[in-house]
Image (cartoon, rainbow, N blue to C red; front, side, top):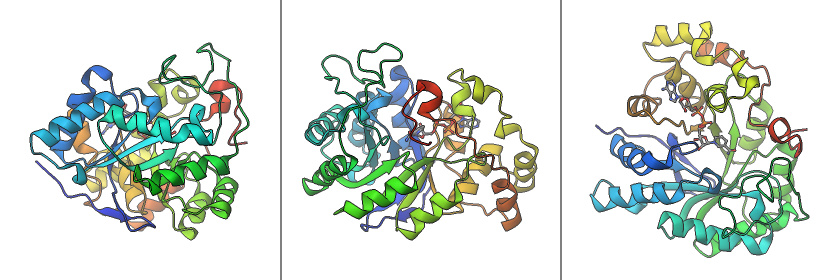
Length: 324
Ligand code: NAD
């Protein structure tokens, strides 16, 4: 069974599928099969990162799908991200090349700066992925001096050298986006942010629109992804899947709560990248562009906003207060 997913046209003319598959916390043991089966189900965009630690296995899934004739490389839209320990200008290209080698591909369709932070370098031979700390010990977060404008300039060289077709930014707020654009040769093509009904960020979306930057929403199910990590903050938040507003809209549209949450984003022009290790859900999550919510339903969902952010380094590191 296959489905056609609409594309979003990026500011450089590249087309990005509006629905993709998120690879964070996809088990290493099953990752290659999950990717292969996701391609079989119709997924074309895969959202990865150095930090997810499963780039090799994802690459094995791509290779098998290509070998079996399910897709060609150019049908796929492969996304990865630069981790903060590689933020210095001279470290960007070598790590991007390592990540490409891990995937077994020679270009990324999109490569993001994962977070607007610069951390002390950890040699991949010592620990990879490095995570947030220098030594691997809790609390050992070591920010360094490495201006964002230089990181971005290095990202631009990846495009010039054909290693990335598009470059983007993730977890950036308004003033940083404007600062990047002030010095950029290449305006970011995509902004990836936490976005769900408890964190709607309307002015950030407005800014991205004004600047011609597409937006990809992550953690579309709000607390769900973070409950799995055992985070109290998320466990104490009412699940969006059980919220009466979402359940009523789901029932009225004969869809699941998950599909309503994703459609609320796609109908407003955002891309989504839900993650699931479960094959039925993975298929369910793909069918989120082929029905229409009513305007009052969209508004009712947006009204659930609480400015509640889960993926905030302040909360889990006690430092790197990037959303202050
Ligand atoms: P998500 O909102 O996609 O939720 C994932 C969890 O929801 C799954 O583990 C599963 O338990 C559950 N789920 C999935 N589909 C379901 C369904 N149909 N019905 C019921 N439950 C379902 O969370 P996420 O993984 O945090 O975000 C998606 C992707 O976004 C990630 O995999 C990653 O690629 C990306 N991401 C990026 C950043 C960043 O800093 N840029 C941060 C977090 C996530």
